[in-house]
Amino acid sequence: MKKTFKLKVENKHPDRQIESIKHEVRKYIKREKNKPKAEGVDFWNFNCKFGKNNEEAIVIDFIDITKNIDQASAEDWETLYMEILSVAGKREAKPEVTETTEINEEDK
Image 1 (tube, rainbow, N blue to C red):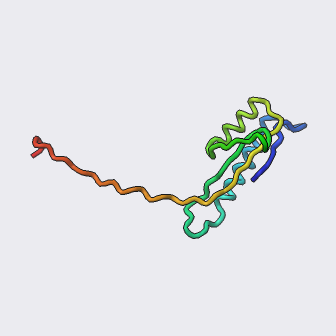
Image 2: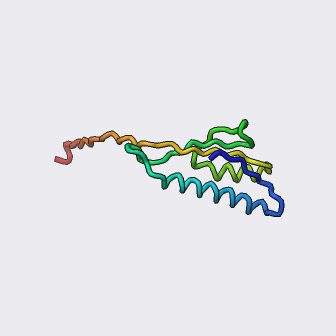
């Protein structure tokens, strides 16, 4: 999703506009997560960019999307640009940890 949202819309309260933007983003993410995964893919990861427009957009973490939307609203932006692209992700196996038990002379 590459989209520019207007934060100030005539006949709409700014808080309701922010909530509708968040709702649209959540709906898009849910739809992307439910897409079938290719063989060898464990999950969908998201690359995100955020800014006033597409030239000023910076890379952000996926978990910071709503925080950035709230910050844009607090800073009274006219518009905001958001880019969310789904990328196939694969979990890496955790290295096996072997526990060694040390026996103290007192425990004998």
